[in-house]
Image (cartoon, rainbow, N blue to C red; front, side, top):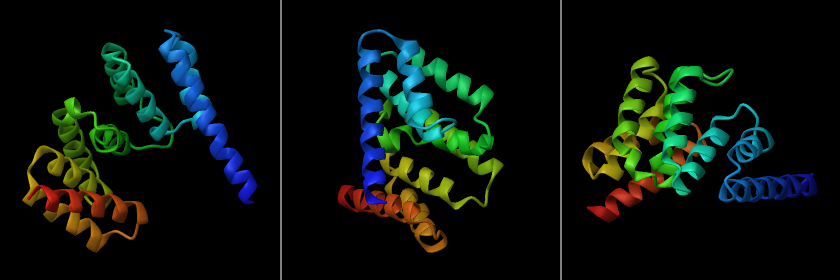
Amino acid sequence: DLKKQEAGKLFLVDAYVLGRAYLNNGKLAEAKRVFLSRLSPNSLSASALWINCLLVEEKKAEAHAEIKCLLNDGIESKSRAEVLDSLACLPVYYMQMELLDDSMCRVNEAISLEPDKITFKGTKGSLLVQQGQLDEGIKLLNEVLNQSSSPHDHEMSEYFLALAFHRK
């Protein structure tokens, strides 16, 4: 049902706004609870959003502690490579450019753990474009377009290819 989908989206927005309000008022435990339980339990995307919000609020020590915890403990039903890739995407989705070098190390480890997972190459190609290594990024992103059947992989690859060609 369309109404249920729209209501669900509104509840997610409300949860996000509530989480940010808690965060802005120094209530980290409450903010984390909202982000990680109400937005999407056991979700890498909710964890990445939480880490991004910490970084935006200049809570870098807390953000890095969350990253370390995620790397050490993982998330139920997700492989270590998937966790690494999700963390590597912070500069891609949230423009957290200070994490570019760490993100490149993480995506390289993800690729070494699961070399056939094409989406990881898309992450790496996007990061290469962000770093200004346009030719290498373009090569990987074209590989993703040719091999992946995922609409999300295609959308991200097309976006970063356009950015790469614009920067050339």
